[in-house]
Length: 274
Image (cartoon, rainbow, N blue to C red):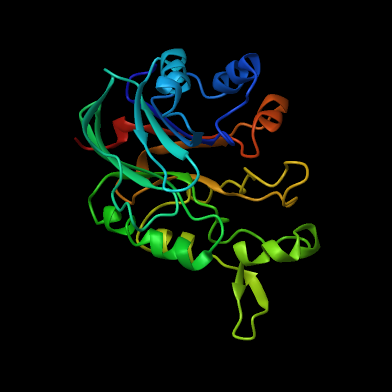
């Protein structure tokens, strides 16, 4: 691992990951070599003596921090490459009663810099509840604080385009994504959650680097067939100057392993004053 470069990933692995062991190994290989990795939908990885959790941590050479989800066993797993990245403290559930899934807070130190890492999986079904969940995350973007928000945020980017046609999404699922009008009908995309985060200083990596938004979801057959962004690594304003690269891993293995693609951000910590 290159000193002073911090590679941070997010990956919703879908229902606990590929059931076949060889397929699961290929899935893990997509995110090998990172310093910090947030996995969403580590489904039931607390069972069977945490066998899959322990296997994943061992295969990736990272320290696992499990945060139980409030909904159907879709836990969060934060993996840290120690000792290069030091874990100072970890809070597995910052607001247990207020998240559909969960949110964790971990203070880490890398190359002399302390960074607060927030890991979450925001509400998939309700834009109103997604917005409420962001209230637990915005405070960590205070001026001067170096923070990272990692996860499946279940929202498009703040200025991403509308779907070419809403006909690709079954009508009974429109309420997951669209503004609900007073009439009960639907308007355009509900962007309140992501805009609440960027308004306080979290940086959208693609926009920060001048890249077009790359979809991370919506390609899975039989689902909501509209390719769009859902997965993010958002640095706070104090950390954003160190962001040098953002990429989405999009290849046949990734597309057949999960209904989400992994996203990886790279930070050059040499640009920061200790």
